[in-house]
Length: 269
Image 1: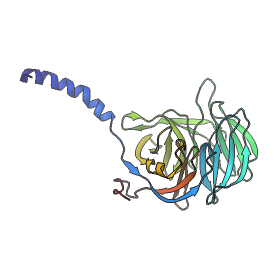
Image 2: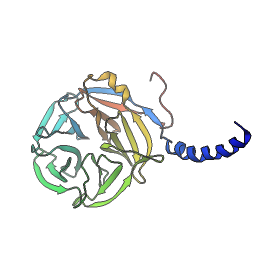
Image 3: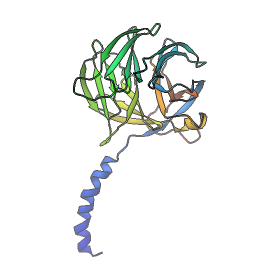
Image 4: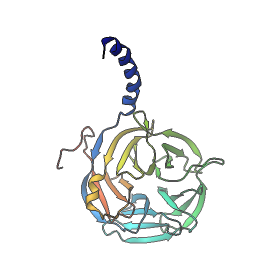
């Protein structure tokens, strides 16, 4: 190619490719390390998960199959179970005061249950009229509920009446991060499962930026081959313990990630 053509074409290539390179910028990836593993009911299609008072609270989805359960961590045994009306598909859950808030998938309605015995107490609307937001993941950061809808946004809601207070788009560099699923707050960050992916997005809810990824793929070799997608994150703020599981997984794991949050763990760790 002649020098003349190079001078003409090179600026054009730079102008075309540079935005693409910028858009591909990614947050660092950190592999998880297993600290402990526990049995998990493989018949549970895990939608929501949180840890409270020494036990796990879990929701399982499916029309005609949905339920809430209080689960003993060490044995995976259900201590209490509450079936959900067959017309509703259970999704994310989060605690608030002495209650548990439960989303359903497409109905626009959520339900409030007693934390003590899972008795249904009330219902609430999670979207405003003329919107089509679905209910996927739910967590509570101490002052507001945070909801995911399978898109690339986190939605914020008042705890008193679940009225919306805003939203933020989640992005890794310039790339929107879609299919946000189960959510969990970890101090001032939000952890989010990504539907059909074995990784967790670590999100700054102030601006929606993904600051890191947690790679869950090492767990695949420790679960049954028929296990579904990773889904279910529970964080114990008092102890810093982080638990993960998935849909129809036969195990639940306590994991840790390199505390430096600067580089991946060495090979073999």
